Image (cartoon, rainbow, N blue to C red):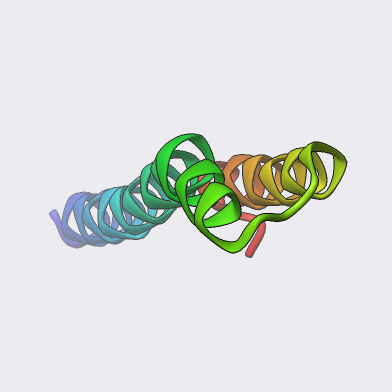
Length: 69
């Protein structure tokens, strides 16, 4: 009985941690797809710099979703 409670507690904790990573990853992905190009156009940044910023945010998004932050 005690082992079942411990396993259930670990599963619940893992789900909470994974959910946070997924939310962070989704936020970074949205920022890279929508916010970065909009701000870059507003500030007049070059397309290569905008692309580099988007790539960096997408890599961070991927790491956050996998839980390697």
